[in-house]
Image 1 (cartoon, rainbow, N blue to C red):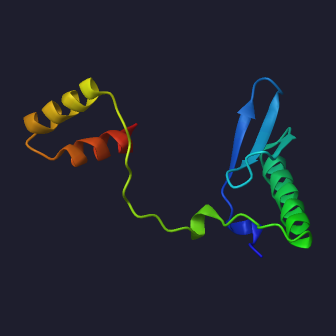
Image 2 (tube, one colour):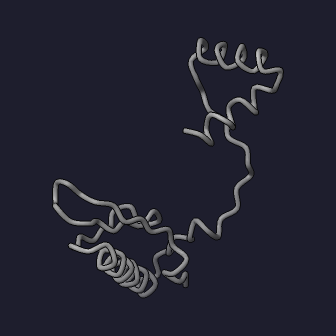
Length: 109
């Protein structure tokens, strides 16, 4: 069984709720609201722990932590032809590969 410590947690502020919300990437349907950041983390971890235990008890497959997965480093995406052209021109102007231009843009948002 996966340990809840290895899952990917995020705490963010919710203007709508006026509280912090705890989230877990591996369990997108779960969340926990709390007035303090630390309480939101503690709450979402408990909810995830309960979900993992329930899933294991019923024989369901428990999600693998994202931290345990391996990735190929290859990503195939479809983009508009004009954007492809613009990126290729930018790469040519920088005397670098299209791949490097795209990686730089992804890394810097």
